[in-house]
Length: 58
Length: 194
Image (cartoon, rainbow over all chains, first blue to last red; front, side, top):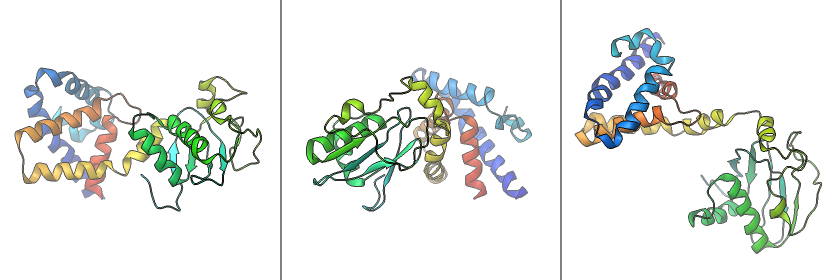
């Protein structure tokens, strides 16, 4: 079970590091509002993002 | 989702509370009755007809679907319709039909005579829309994420990655009860865990 959890956290942080974060600066102005709201909600309103495993992605 | 002919189809009604029972000898005969405060089971044949209405843009939300069922039945079946909507805050099991009406269903559908305030009716519904949205979406959302991730792994294009990220941030950012960053992260965790 512990291994599974470790995997999952790695998966989400991998998605963040490999896809989401590099794409944010490339967002065209038309989509910037949606992306900004999503990122801000992820950082501000998410309990899961406060876990230690995601600290590196901040 | 319209299942097999024998299974009743559950529709979630957000605010209005209906309790209607349809007995008819027409071609579109069917029954629609409460199985819970917020769910209504509908005969699939009625729902198919109503979905045709919805496809024409006449129904936009589940309450209207039920109204569409009513109007559809009124138009074609012409049977004996009995509707009572006065049990909104009480138990809503299958109970004897109270206010019998004929051909006047549509006017009374969705109204709550004793509690005209819609908010009070909504407060009487125990399970919140948030939970319902989560439960309904949970069937499909992991599969969507998995297929998107597999596409990302196999044949990645810049445009796909861009819109994938756009989708993820949209899910995290959209202001719908039940859709939150926590939900998305939980789904991703679930994929890997299962």
